Length: 353
Image (cartoon, rainbow, N blue to C red; front, top):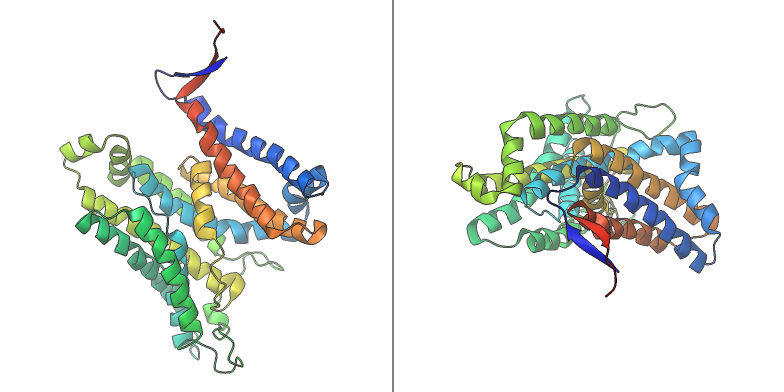
């Protein structure tokens, strides 16, 4: 018989091995899933994980899909490390896109290099303000930030729909619920000619570097880690929990809002009701797959972006349903959480009596 035996201390080797094991188990389960759907499982895995790496345009698309995932996951990782659970990054992403888009539309006839920085500030401020709602409710009433932030996602999506169907609707758009297309000064510059890769990818890379410095070379990072590992010791040391809750939720909201601004002013180029694309929820998988470490999140973001690009290719080339790709991504989180037990436990073979 097999039994789990507690380790004397957490295994650092298993801490970094289990994400790779989760990816392998997900691929093996994916083979069975695609076979049940009547598709060639090995061809499906090849299309999803290999073909995008061989196509030049698909490689640049990894930057487009990966940038918002990395940005949002970086913000979430601070709170998760401290035991503060922001599950509503999708809503903060939506509000960030809305506030940044409102700035772009307010200056629709005005051009200038100052417009994009102003939109970025508006997007980050909008996302942070939306995240401060669950922060304030937890600080003031000890409300559960998981439920509050999650419910605010649907409020944000309805608000976006109301705005693009009302005050922000394109007057020349034949009554469709969408805004005007942003002009050139409100559109992100392209960093690779002939592709959609924009400067948001560079911002995501910069966020990785800054997050690493904050976590490992700054007092704020020490406070985050201490609250996550020993909250009583953190309070005894004089760190204030309310301030940390506000800082972590505000930071994650700001980065999610900035990612929303990048999406609206990058690939989409306008405000539409379908702009929320699940990045905020997928970024939770990215954060845990990357072990809440900035470099790990960067690598995990690339893997998850690969499933996005490969999944879209598989839908067209093999007629796979979109839901199959969502299940594929969900299995990744399932296996990651399932085998995470190996970090603190080891498997031992016990002789039957």
